[in-house]
Length: 299
Ligand code: SF4
Image (cartoon, rainbow, N blue to C red; front, side, top):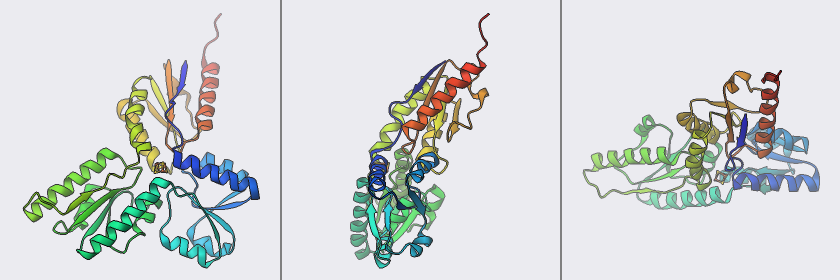
């Protein structure tokens, strides 16, 4: 069996930057708190926890007065920075620069829209940390929309500016904003609409779709390696499966079932923006061992 790891899979630069920052801090002090999982990949979190990283959640902050804490690539709302300051904590800010720019844009749009009774629409997952960080930038009316059914909360007669969570599908964002446009036209009876759609899906993710689909098509079967919590992982996995039905999801080496490999001559291994390269290599090694153990010996 030939095994190939997708050269374009693995950490995006925002995650690489956050992990390097954590490793640097751990190298200096041997311990560091992180607010939420530094990356949506259990195996990578465990690796860093062995080096001294400790993941805590917002309701635990108060128990860590004066300690050092990292804010991960997804970013945080201003209220979290204020809370950390109130508790005398030192913040190591690993917010991805792309997310930081997006937060600034949401803040600016919110200031303008508030003066004209407008609304901000964020296409994303309501409980995602990045969305939480974005909606916290403004006290303007914000609607988080994940499915077209969620559009009922919007008043289409009033001005709207749309943003997308960076890791959402650009195609789905286009579909949602087209619906918004159509409903505004119907509500206002004009094509001259008070609507602004900001292109805010991340290029690091958007550019992966085409190359990943091509990679998935080239192989008999695909092992998609990702943490369960990664929204980007779920989306890219579905994308692989839509072009190659023999796509299997695995979080690591333990779940690989020998039947997934039956009849496979060319196996592709790929992953999410939060999947470490070392984990895809470990999966490749495990597959090679299974293949070796199940290949009948020549007489
Ligand atoms: S997916 Fe893009 S925006 Fe999100 S952390 Fe990675 S580089 Fe930053």
